[in-house]
Length: 632
Image (cartoon, rainbow, N blue to C red; front, side, top):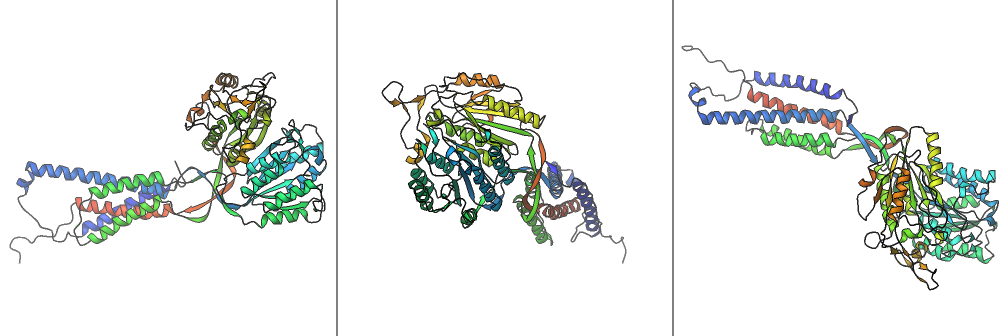
């Protein structure tokens, strides 16, 4: 705990002592009303019973003095505004917009213009949370929903620059090829739909889809089915078709695209027509922004609770020890003590006024989350028959909470590896990125490889170490260890790895798997199981976890292996993960202007009044003069 004004406790102590001295001096000068002088009390004070009572009274008064002094000390600390590092989730009013771009070969040069369109949308919608998904033969989430618009523009420009450089196989759209066909529009739309998080919270959701509507390949989810899924989740599709500049949708594919957009409550427009971009932005803006809890941020903010708790306990103890007051000022004493209790309660509630700001903090650590997204992670042997991916998602959320203020990056690993979210401080985006992963049989046709992310992770770690020397880099690998790929596995490397863990899910006995895109259409847990056709007769495929493979991966990275079970705390995974040091970050978070410091000063005055009353009761007062014998 730190103090905003460290000198305040000393100033409060000096002022309280001065005030106490003044009050006691004034009280002692006033004769006690109705004082009775007795003679020959030495026999009474010598009695054992009297002495026992006197000792108890002295102990009681000493304890009372200590309790009041502790209360006064805690009040002076409260007046100095104690602060601690806190995780805040600022409120904002915004909408969710997922940008969904078809990067198949049929789109050609239209993609570069569409990315410029997306940049225009971002600039014209400064309050929205934005996400990006690219798809060709496979859909890939480039980054999840985030309100960090500088980050959004940086990633859009990175993809846009790849078109200017005309680099074949650019990392900007890595993972969108290698599937069945060249343009699986339905799968792309379904992935965009699953990119929306917090579906239990009513808020405007818009999917900005740019495609020429030409399907090539065998998507797991049809275009109409994906559109129905969006409509069922309250997501409006705004479709932009570069192959239909007039927006008349004369061919069947364009008509289907227009139908799903309008059925969802969205819109359909051609690209190139006057005002097409402005019309889409206006359609999004027409949806009323909803209140939203933003991405968690670390701030150093007022935290009076520990000192308030100490003051409350000490003052309540003081009230229990206090001597009853039946004098003429008894009513004032009750008001003073009751007011002090009310003040303590108010301080504990942390009252404040709007309009203050607290500087943001960040941790000097980067956390890389490598998540297996092959179909084996859909095996239903995690906990009570739940998919393994659910355990991974829960652990990612727990890790993000533990390392609040760090930068996060997510990597989806299967037969190949794709960075689904570059490094960002948006913790909510990291969780959303993993929530959007859909283990699919389509992505596992080439087999699974627990070490598929090795080369990509090594490159990212090397770039991070060069860019930020001395910054810790933690790696958490989450998977089941099953390997079905025929290609030679490439080992992980421990270079530039500061710590982390390999987390294992599933059992060696194995479990059946539902194909995630199909389960979407059947409603959550529905849908058929994945079939194994290698023996000629189709049978339900069973995935077997391989903890030995994961232990080997952990050894290569130099981190521990932890077998995970449903509902377990995340602590065992953090034995080799330093949280990093807190550093000042750019920006501020809106917080309330605290009132606890001022309330603590009033509390201190009340406590000083109690101390003055106590000292007045135990110290001798000025006695009235007794007339001399024989005086008249």
